[in-house]
Image 1: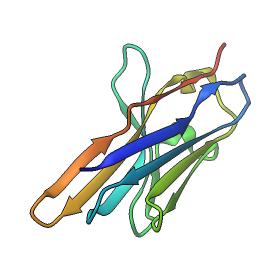
Image 2: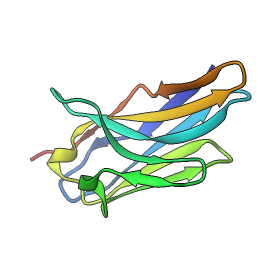
Image 3: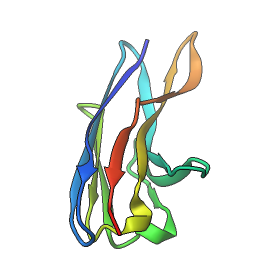
Image 4: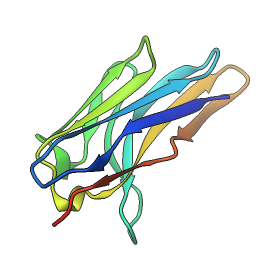
Length: 120
């Protein structure tokens, strides 16, 4: 199967920075889109940033210019550098991976989530 392991997160003051890292593994899988979603209390999960295998990148508008996603295709890792953090960035951040394998098809996998807290 596919494993998705996240690291990073924590508590940071407004204007500060954090870096999230995610490593995905799975034998004979092709890793397509990788990225990050977040879910704040009482809200739906929302896209933060994604990167395809050909490095087409997509950001939600509210993080453009502050967050940077980077992907290493050789290692199947995806990082999210978050700068100028705001209280509204507070959420549980989940790593997302879409994979494909012959006979298995295309499926989505999620990390367990890591908390990012930016106090008022």
